[in-house]
Length: 350
Image 1 (tube, rainbow, N blue to C red):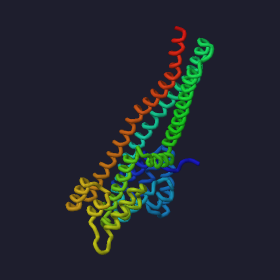
Image 2 (image 1 turned 120 degrees about the vertical axis):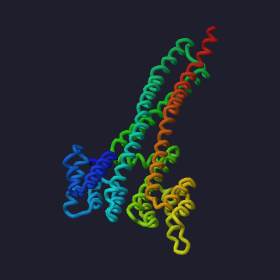
Image 3 (image 1 turned 90 degrees about the horizontal axis):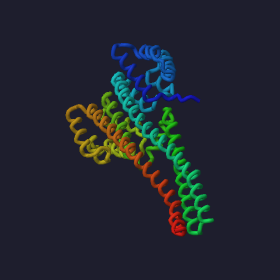
Image 4 (image 1 turned 60 degrees about the horizontal axis):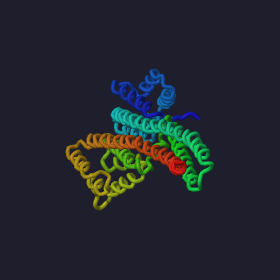
């Protein structure tokens, strides 16, 4: 079955175009119809057609989006909040910006996977040639020179063969995993599964935590901009959080804010639960005092997203030296183990 999910680029195009039409006074159904007529993208066109059909039947934009099954629940919930407070255009613009940044993130993920795929394929070919072509030649030469290897020498060659085949096996496994990940990164549903899988890896945990924090903060900004009071905005934004660790922190903060006897303020609750660090708490406090909390939250969300991007860049930067080191050790150890018996043989001949 074809993937019904829209990609980040298609989501950005949808929200950006509809927001533009709304800004010049075009009704929502006409805005979607104009997008339908102007796009050549097959998936986006089919989705716009389904949304338009639901709109002319009387559904709200958020309900129409939900019926298609092509939009993330996060986007649907934010559009519903915008509709409830008359800020649909503003929400659509924020979503367009968010998915534009997300597409930039996915491009980096694809690059971080694609490069290792190429490198691992080359490494697999090198190791396969080493263990299948070079090592048998060494073994034949040793046997012809010495009439058969001594037990110790033969053990060295055997160890070299084992090292070579183990290195080749590990490289092939890594290559297959990288190819599967790269194939998954080319579809929206595959990307969702890939991101969930990568988010569980220890080396990627920090970057994905910042990404989850960025998404939550962006949702909180939209809800506060939509006119919700802070307590309700945190409760609604909590629904968008999928990261278990962040969800626990936000839930603790929300419980503190809604405590009947001694309710905490937003900065106090976030500080106590560890949602934001001290620097961001000061920025949030300033936003509350100046009445610009939604603007401040948007700025914080952008900052968290940039930190997530930096984390992914750092992971990519570590891939090449790690793979190069693995290959150097594998090939070097294999060849050294096989060449060591030559020293004893040459000594005997001399």
